[in-house]
Image 1: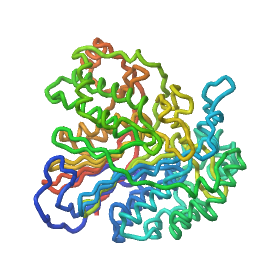
Image 2: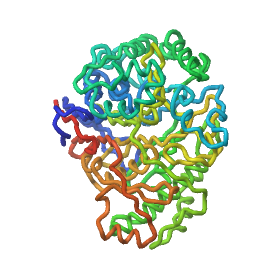
Image 3: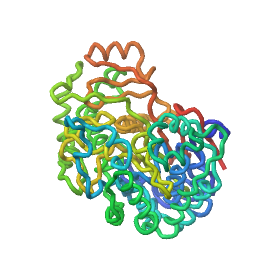
Image 4: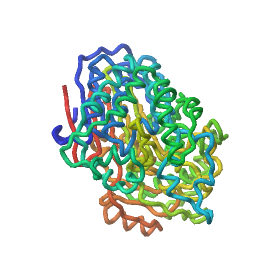
Length: 572
């Protein structure tokens, strides 16, 4: 069982928890069966972005909780200690696997547009996108979905009452914690925006400046909000005291939320997307995530090639071309399935992939110039992901977000809740890029009650003998990071190797390949350039958290992304 870095360096976390072994009760699962195994690992693994969150998951497992209770604890704790990336003012998407019957389910806790949404609010007088209203302040915030999603998971899949699963997060908020370097830097970077709203200033800029290293930071307002959820479930957030405070704060600052918007919110269970590739079944996110559709489409295209027999440049060429075509379809077709009819049967069909494969030349890049151009900003890491496998073999892949760094920068007074800025993930102006450079069509246009499209791609990969739970933040790069992680896992690599791999990314427009330093050697870079690719170097990206289970040896392996400088490894 592999470990991450020394536990005293605390910013991101992973945890391996030992327990009593359980005997197998049947034959191993066949490849691509959708059921991870009839054997339980007898110990548990959690990989998350912060050691406080990992410890919260451990605490709940020790109480007798399962992976789903631990997921509630981890997510709620991240809302306290990692607000730059996620929180109860945002939303999440999760793929869950229940070991007892092999049931796989997707939990859609994506935010929704308020009923009074008006696309004109996101336009400048000249008709260009207004990036400020789309990304900052109450107009940028969708109705949060995370509280309802956590309640749904606890009620339908957990063993423990919410009061127990939320207890670690509430305690940390009450007693305080030391903000890590990532959080301090995020607050400093967004200081000017936070200063625009009194409650944001009071919470994140005590004394008028970001918290210093070593300071103990308490969050009593969010503790109170979590206590109401623990006691009353959905009613504790979407009705009563918290709902009234949220609506009052939003409307006082120029937003358009109503109590009815909150009261009508529902987290939803959906059927995951599944795709078979090289003897493995990938269980991943359906719309309103675009990630699972794109990953399935890419893998279907790649299934026509034997990548293992190719040199690095040729293999990369085919992967990039598959990415290019999947992102084109992402821009044109996808949206909220409750509002938009999407041709998923076509997009997920191996016959459609056959046709796309025929358009790929063996030695030349395919230009993306036939469709409207979009210039992307640097993809961000303003999301979080955690992966869990418990002692019974239950699994949770959860990706949670408030969208951009510190979300909307707007805290609703009296609640401690930092609101998301997910309205930017709608196609607020058709065929104009959002903050991640992704285009959108009318399929992703804003409508009251509608969920905005997402790139979140929590995934579970199930083979005859090995299983992985995987995901990452990264805006539009989430899709390609998870895809590359899946390919590395199927190639036999460990969790630590998968998380550490150098990365490349292509999203159709702009027509460039983002490359991390060292991802290709000189020969491969030269070959790709001669094929017609434009390679654009950029800083390392990603914050992947991976758990793997080798069922032949019954070994768990967990890893957090080494690009983030400190971590936690622990066995007990």
